Image (cartoon, rainbow, N blue to C red; front, side):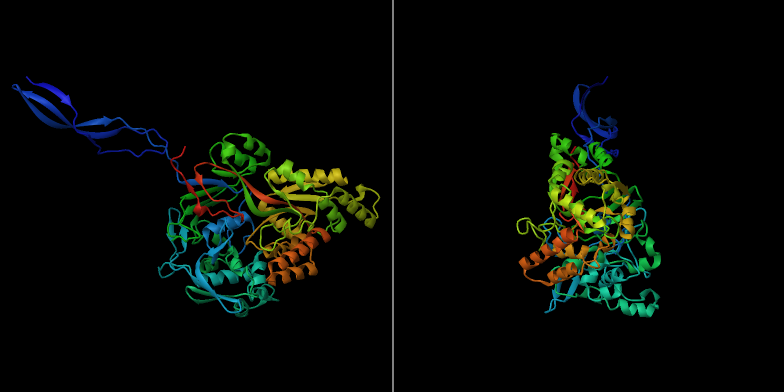
Length: 608
């Protein structure tokens, strides 16, 4: 009879395993085990081996998170993903991930870096530049299951070429595109303004139209060489051609799909990310472009997908606290609590931000068609009280529009008396001057004033605070209303109310991008303000050509005083900061110009 002593001497060979979910409980694995044993046969000890099948005890799974980042744009849909039509921060943010310009503005240092142009050279007069493009960057699209390269009719991969950049620049300048941002190129790119203002252009035949379009001084010399001629040798020209309005665009797709070319399934791009999904008014999802080669200024993305939801500040912050969003702005109502919370305070960052918060006036609508009324309203805003007790995020009270720190913008040290100041006594004096001029004996005779902002809890709190200041200082009661972002932008351009709220973030760090491009004749907000001042415009145009920085700064300070005090076309309120909470597993940069470089962000997938 056999007597057996069992001892396991050799480890386990696993032949069947299971796929474990990131945070799921692992299921048992069926394994083969090689077992050795001692066997006594007729008084002699022998060693035998045997393979047996057993169920292994599972080890705990290592917790990991998907390589997906969840963010929010704020309430309201992204207005457009068309580079020529984008004007707002959410649209430009997405366009900046889908495409890269000839040059790129570093989001942290605000230094100019090479983008899709790996290098360039300038003519002796500084007017003409030749850009040499990065080669081998394919156009891509999301096909419903993966990102794929775009092919031409012959089955060849379509690569980004100089012709695509030429088309993009000329399309923005084409009046039939109706680009609200074309004026930037109109100021800078030779032939662009002539195209924008071409009389009777829409009635020309195709051949005549093309002749005018060809007058725009952007020309592909070959597939990877682009020549651009500017109107003046301004130091910021290289910044302007790097903006989203000058991106390469898929001419074949736009010709085929028209306005629908930006939608998911159709959209073609070439940047660090591609468009995966866009559920209008709900979410927008970007997916990593596996064909993007990476640049020093725009590396290969490290996060697989970015999902943007469209939520107001309070529900977004609640989602952040629940662990469903990875980074959000802090609502004004929650900032004190965040600062006091031992966890949230560690996740809070208050950083410089190159933006200005302001109220604009429709100078054609009574009673703000009168400069004394506009000055009264602006003087009556207690900006210091507002940033101390309402916004509470380290913002700076603004006396003028251009953000200090930009090239040639005035500073409080250099020009403390520029622009307009908070001054209740001056506000009352201006109101009395208005009453006398209009022959009014009572405040009740003043026509109704409507103050409008885009839908946002933060903007609502600011509007309520400022309207209360107007009531207490001037005795004027205003009606506060709001609209969803996309609708609001249309209202501001087509029929702005008496007072309206906007913010301006830098496109490039020079006063020209602020004072001139926004408010000079032909500027971005001319239709919203209904204000045109030839003296102001002439000063800005002269400052744009001035080479001495101190002289430029003095000229812009003079222009800002016309804008904010003498004509009071706007009421500057504060210079922004970024007030944000970010989960500790997110490795990120903080942009000064309003558009993040998400391709530089990463997630620590092993952190709890």
